[in-house]
Length: 127
Image (cartoon, rainbow, N blue to C red; front, side):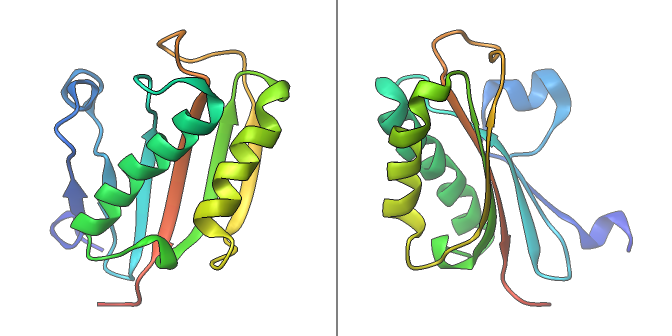
């Protein structure tokens, strides 16, 4: 696979240029990989999870996909006490889709106000 077959999607986020990454990468086999998404401006773990998945959904939309195409999610949390709230958000967004999912407790994020970060993988079929 050549690099010109890979589509790189930007959200315009400041960290993309500073760190050198894409919000999402769309492969010719139909797989779309969405980088870690956060919502530091939201309050609480539930709202941050919903907001972070919203950022991911915007990237998927640029690739022509929606939440129904999601096949895997990863949820990173800074506190085990937030599992129920983040899980509730995930269930509301993906109950009908039922992607493979992981929830992982981490020591922290770049911005200490962040308590949740999510990654999404989606499949839209081969081009």
